[in-house]
Image 1 (cartoon, rainbow, N blue to C red):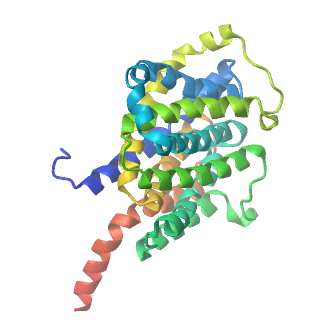
Image 2 (image 1 turned 180 degrees about the horizontal axis):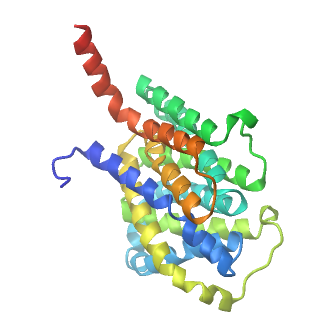
Image 3 (image 1 turned 135 degrees about the vertical axis):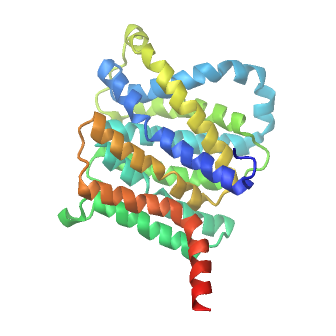
Length: 303
């Protein structure tokens, strides 16, 4: 089915799929929170389950992981910190607020890619950012004021967005690491970052759940594994082949999926305003691919 596609197209589809998968991951995260593994400890469990499943592979291939050097470790640290903050954000603020603030990441990614990698900021990418920011402002109801972060969950989402911009640039610069190695360090550092956040003042009252409580939420292990592992693999396979800003735009599929599922299962609003915002954000993700054909068509018409 995908045999005739270019590497760039396959990488784009992988990143878009990853966004769809991550748009669902708030469901088991909040499920664990309701089942007794509350607040930041739900994030610890969320990353701990995939790490446990990855452990046999890590034990067998530890030499390959260490052979990748500090480049791989820095990728793991950046991705682990970014997504640990983001996961906690969805517990400390509304799902849609967390999603929208996290998806300022294309702006940070494009700017950082320009500074560090000297990658061009094309007209198509500027258009994509404008669509994306417009969609976010519509979803945030700009009539009530600019959507500055207003609680700890909002700030976590914004920190996560900036962290992913760093991670995307590191992924683009890395040459020797493969997706499995990146997944393994991502889950490891994600657990470390999640534990540190759970024990920090940002998490509020520190109350470590009993082991029996952790055992009680193990039924959530299957949906976690089904959502997180393929989504992470797709992201870490596709991201190194694309401009970091484009990766952020493709991940915006998560906003649409997250907004719709939050409306269905978390009773968060989904009216004309939210649907308009989702539509604009979807255009942001597609604009990179629609811009060139539209420009060629207009050029033909002018001639």
